[in-house]
Image (cartoon, one colour):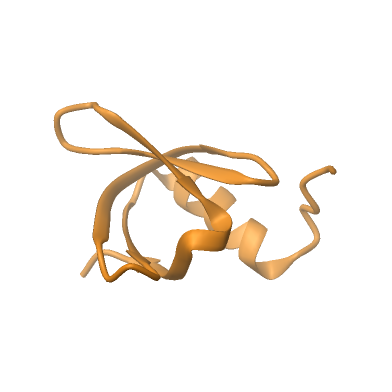
Length: 69
């Protein structure tokens, strides 16, 4: 399975990576993950917190993603 860079959601995450902007990921469990997106693949997104600790999140567990206010 390849990452479809034509999809708006994939482009939005790629823009967040390129711009180094912080995001908020709300998970279906209700947990909130904040930080900068380091990479994405077809199955996961890696978010680095302010301590530079990576959190790998499975895409199917994401309720929403938005820029941090």
